[in-house]
Image 1 (cartoon, each protein chain N blue to C red):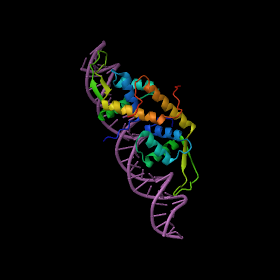
Image 2 (cartoon, rainbow over the protein chains, first blue to last red):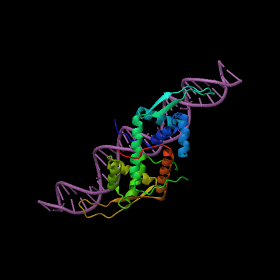
Image 3 (cartoon, each protein chain N blue to C red):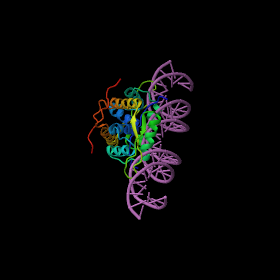
Image 4 (cartoon, protein in one colour):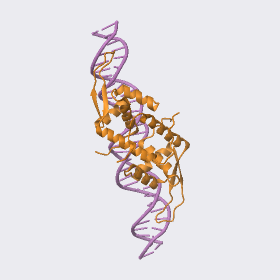
Length: 109
Length: 109
DNA sequence: CTATTTCTTCTACAATGTAGACTGATGTGC
DNA sequence: GCACATCAGTCTACATTGTAGAAGAAATAG
C-alpha cells in the first residue's frame, strides 16, 4: 500500500479543490471542474473520486453549516492533506519531466 | 465513438514517443518512460497501452529491419497519428486550464 | 405534512493501469 | 545442426480509475 499514481480525474479534482480554496464542496467542485475541462461531469463521478481520494488520505472533509436557502442542507467541504499536496506536486513534477523538450502547445480553442 | 479522455499512462507514453522520434519502439519506450517518470514499468504494461492507443487510432506502427546484434529481431516502431497529436494537445490544454492560477511547484526532489 | 430544492450516498459497469507468463526471431558457440 | 542466450513482442488476468444514474437525506416554503 504505497503505490501512488493519480489518475487524470483525480489530479483534476485536486487542482479544482485548490482553486476553490474554502468553498470546495461537491456541487461547486463539479461545476468548476466542468468549466475548466469544458466538459460535463456528473455529481456521482465527482463524489466517487472524492471518496476514493479521502480513503487514500489525500483529502479530508468537514461539514459546514446549512445555509438558510430552500434546500440548503449542510455541505461537505474538502481540502488536501499534506500527503495529498505532496502527491499532487509529485504528479506535476513527473508531468514536467515528461513534457520536457517537446514542443507541446498550450493555447486553448 | 468519440469519448476521448486520455489516461495518465496513455499521455505519458504518447509524450515519450514524441520525445524518441524515430526509434520509438517497445523497449526504448519502456526505458525512456521509466527514466522520465523515475519509476519502473513492465513491457507488458507498455505494450498494452500501445495496443489500446493504436486501436483508438491515436498511434500507428510499422516494422523496422532486424539489427545484426545477438537476438536483434525486427522492432515495431510507433508514431502519433493526426488524431493522436490532436488528442494529446487537447489533454495538455485542459491540463493548463486546470493548473491556471494555482501555485503548483515544478521542482523535483 | 408534502412538495420542492440542494446536496450526498450507493450501485454497477466501462476504461485504464499493471504484472508476469508465454511465444517468436536471431545470433553464438560447440 | 543443435542447444542456448538474447532481444522483442503477444496474451491473459486482475486491480484501480472513470462515469452514470438512481436513491436517500436534510432543509425551507406553503
